[in-house]
Image (cartoon, rainbow, N blue to C red; front, side, top):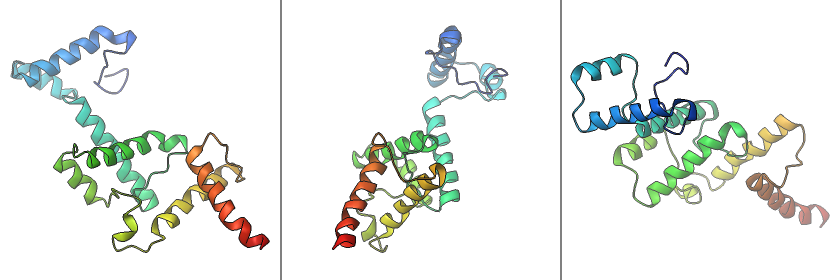
Amino acid sequence: KAQNGHCNVSTLDAQNKSLGKWVNKQRMFYKRNTLSSNHIQQLNSIGFIWDHLEHAWNERFDQLCTFKAQHGHCLVFQYEAQYTTLGRWVNNQRESYKKNTLSASRIEQLNSIGFIWAIRDHSSENEAPDHVWIIKLGEPCEFQRLHGHMDVPSDNKNLFQRISEQRLEILPKRTG
């Protein structure tokens, strides 16, 4: 913990493989109720993470709350490196929801911050039909602010496609 700031050691970490195995064993003993209360107390005192998946979910949820506080919505744009991981997590929540594999408590948490489950259907939820389009306008504006131009590279597929579609929609109107 002193070196890395946490107790969440992975067995995939080549430098700490044996420690990662030990951490997993402690979690297993804890789940089986075979870990002594003294050991539980000692591990709790250093901030041991008993359920690393739950911990990771909560960290992403906190990041989404921060994103919403900064941007006023939960539609995470994935084109910028700083949002790629959070954007994937948001999409995974939507997919889990569609597959009915997301727990009721997580659905409730996400609903509590105004999470949008179905982007294409969002306008039917008492919002103006252009609500998503207006929010998505922030993405190219942010790209322009960061890069000083609107020449979006084609490897940035989502934004490139949206900009291309807008240009095609506007171009005939300007020339006509």
